[in-house]
Length: 210
Image 1: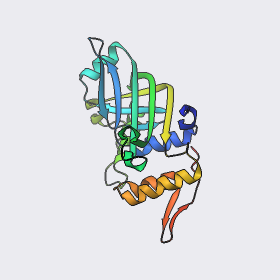
Image 2: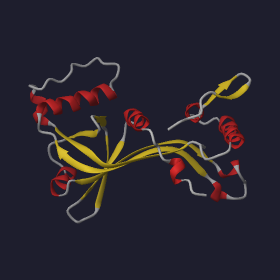
Image 3: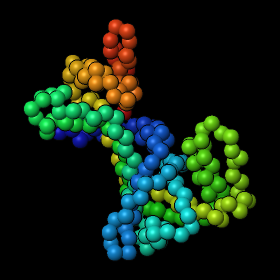
Image 4: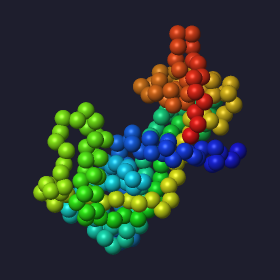
């Protein structure tokens, strides 16, 4: 069965929504010996680019200076599906529901103070939405103590797997099993799948369109 097209996130708004919710992304650059270096980073997606901040010196910055072609990835495991959901004798049937976004792009250092300020305030707004901080101003010296770089996507691909490739009755059966397994992420996963948990059982409230 060919699932590639079915799993593709076609909505750019959904991609942005996902990136705005995720707290950890991974940026991949090429080191001096030609090996990929993958680093987990806080990030914010603004104006169709991924912004990250860093110390003013470091290996990843050196890598980007030599070769500005980078990769970026963010993912979220929604629910691990144990093999016994299908067959208790066949471990190969274990699966995972997930969302992911993968970017191939060009990295550049942000030197414009207004853009740098925008990125840093965007990071604060994302990670501290409750506020209680003084916004950064472009004339502040703190801008000189931190490096900000952005990844401008050349390609951007989103994938999600929430049972959309299954028949309605099979999706309902899977949702019921997830509910009964009762993992910490079960209710949120069911919501993303389009189900609501009521006193009378599961109810499809919204067919997900991604």
